[in-house]
Length: 489
Image 1 (cartoon, rainbow, N blue to C red):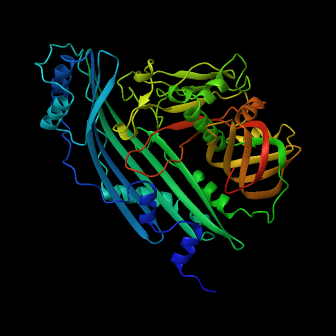
Image 2 (image 1 turned 120 degrees about the vertical axis):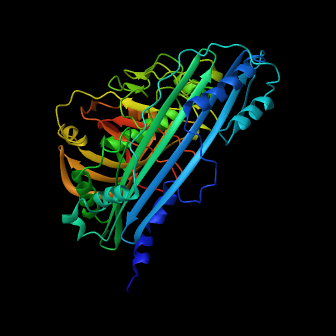
Image 3 (image 1 turned 90 degrees about the vertical axis):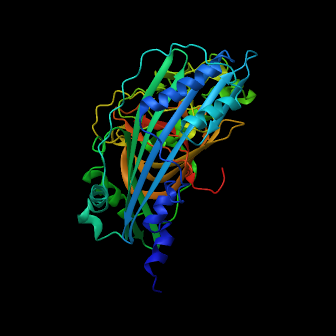
């Protein structure tokens, strides 16, 4: 049977560059919006006036404004595509004297629109004299990026592993640049930050007998375009992973020691932080019961922080979407729950975030960090822990984790599993694997943590309002039930 190229790509679950744009949330035609003013002084004046009028009627008032410009470019064997998105908006928030919170959001950044939004919240009085504090320094303007430079960067991602390209049937590359200016104004506080978030992705695909194998490598950070790019070694590793020979058949399901690579650790931490360690989650009785008491939640080797101040972190920021300055927060201290992510409405501000800076505010992780162990290796993670005479599996390529909100059961989807015997790989490599069981048992069984962390970006559903976050974690060794992937937990 002869397959056309598009049929082959459809079999792999990937298609043209335009498909990659949709997957990254930039494929749909952007709604035309007025180009947001980039003169910080003008925006700040409009926000000052709105907050001063609201403060005359309410004991607390806050204004959050954002101007975002997003460029996503992708290239594959069928061609190239580029998408642009311009978004802007303002969220005005007030608190009544009885403690009730109210807000009004608009998708426009202009003097008249902001004034109308303030009137919608009841700002009918004359503005109250307010000291907003010192003016913030204007953030630096990032270098301009033209289409030629964008294309050259995509070429490097697409052809950076030319020696292996002849054995691949498909390759693709994508570059996503999200440039946001955020203003936060409240009595005694006048803040501004510029967050340039960059994500590079390379996809490689090959046949394994009659089975398609797709591997992806990704790196994301905040800062300049050349701060943390994918290297030729990263691209070659993705190609080699796509070309690895998979073991036919399967293995017997069972509980055994497992070495989790950094990407698998990352999806577990992300699911735990969002489902358990927030003030919203703690309101649920089943979560409160699970975290209550003095018993440790995880092994003493496990210390987890949420630290948006980490330099270059994709999920980092200088202040959150409620205007609270960034500061590290220890969620798990040597296995014990020590804090929760909260927001102003919950009474403990410090991690109130809005998707796209304009969605509904909720406590959410920014840059989770698992404190590395004392291993001495220099590899990407799992290599050091294999040498502990482990009989089991190395689980690689974390795709996502589902945590039962009403219980403790977690299901972690992984791309592949390598069999270990006495700390050495046997050569057997299985695809589409799940790690299932109790989250508390999984974390409590951790008996080794590697010294070399790697950064991962969680998989979110595509959309115009992303929730930027990242996880830095090393590999670790624990014990759990490993099985072939099921459609349901």
